[in-house]
Length: 110
Image (tube, rainbow, N blue to C red; front, side, top):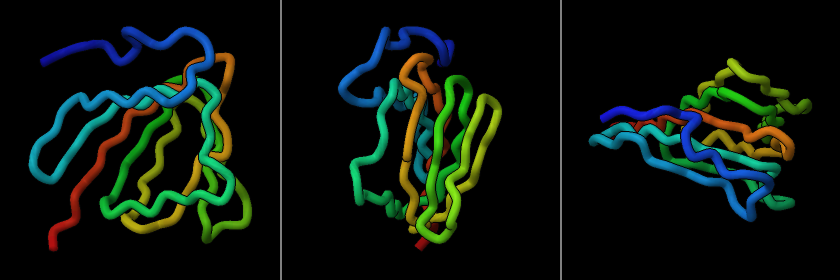
């Protein structure tokens, strides 16, 4: 398998983020996420059962964690490891330049 993370990017602002699973195996899933101005709905927090490592490859984004006072501003090259069940949300993504994320979801053993 091979490809380019910047192939087939949506043009302009889209209704929803585009999520492509690049590879999946027991215990791990790798996704490319393309945001074009999307953000989490008001009052919504992600509370995922798996750990997630995410890197922003292009664009810009602002993440907020429920346990932090200030948002985190991400620029290309920034990455973050999010532990399972750590509540977080996307406050903002760039509406002019596609924000391309590489996300690695790691299933926690029982």
